[in-house]
Length: 249
Image (cartoon, rainbow, N blue to C red; front, side, top):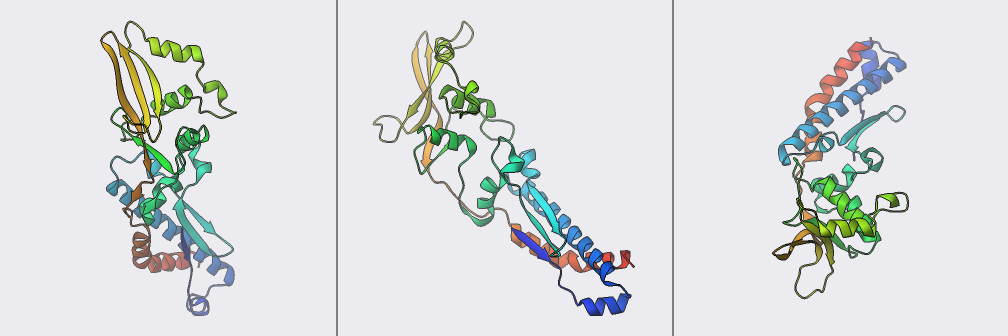
């Protein structure tokens, strides 16, 4: 997390501009909000440059907050409360700042809870995965897999497929081929661990992987979060603080 504080010679500033303490505090808060906003904008722009087709949520993943009493401002990634049913920005973007492994995504936690995804492993796209316009696994396919495997928890149990629904998908229709999802666990002799889609046609059965189960993926630092923040602070803070001081006179 980036925390910015105001460090200024308060007595000298007050004497030079004839400000009372209340005016000086207001100016400090304005400067903190200004530098946090400029930092957030620069990092957001860099996010759009370094990642391939970032989603709108990723481009809105930063928050800024001014701590009025401590005279500090913060800029960092939003947490789960802002992600809704998706994966929090802190989980998948923090490794892009520091490097190293990432946290489990929500669908991975659901698969782990029903003992489909082994402990210490992650689910990543395989050749049979469908993708959205941003290069991520299609959410509809993920929901279908979770529903098929009855991975929704107690609150979402109604989203889990019935046996009758699974049997209908397996049969298919005149226009759509039948299919079922098969879990291949580590140690299988012929197939790589993951979730596979087995299809049935008039010509026989076929198998294609949708998700691979892999050991913890490792990421290199891609987003120069703190370097950008330091650059913006060194470039803009003095001017923003000076403007804020003069605006409260």
